Image (cartoon, rainbow, N blue to C red; front, side, top):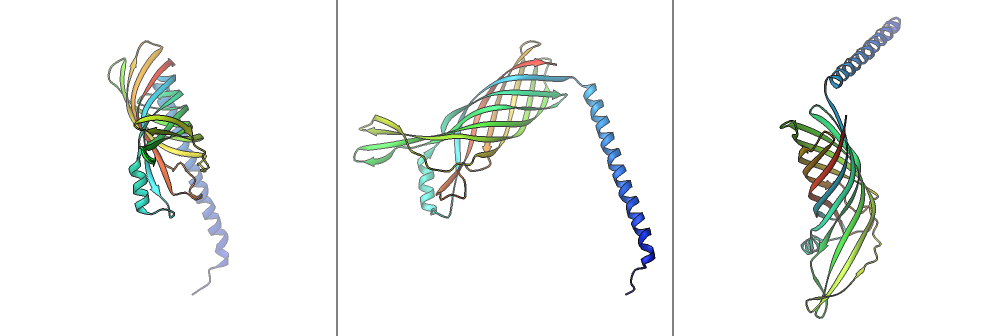
Length: 255
């Protein structure tokens, strides 16, 4: 094989530099064109913004998964003893809409968790536990709108949220002879994930009550993408929470 001609190296370098310059210039022109088109689109459409107060009762469940510290039989027994529980979300939201697309963000407080069925603890005595997790949520949702009339619209949303763990409490209620005998909060030495990501989707119906106010009814589904416990600790099982609920939002509109 022949060695490359060293005299051609400056020409090759110059040619490569020109290609990089042209690619950079083309990329800048493309971004400029996109910016101008997007600006034109925004100026041509009605921009609607709103602040909202949210209340969302929901039903909680969980997906349980085992670790190397537990057998399948033990995991199946734990799963059979656990059931769902009621919870809710309270929040403040900000929404912006341009034509048929928009977004929602804000801050929410979420109460999630699960419960256990009654289990024997001794002679003629049983107990059940209720595990309640408290999270501070920072959501970002993309909304797709379809106007039905001047005052009515339907929408579909896809979003994610960062869930900051505020605390988890387990309350045990004891029973004897079919009656409740008392309850106590159990000591909890588990190590919880400080931040959990969640996926959110839903559909909704929005009704304008006036030029300044609107109300929305929005069935939603949320799934926690991470388990509630840290996986690097000595745990038997982990749980991904999920909720199905109805979000009601009272919105204050402004342009």
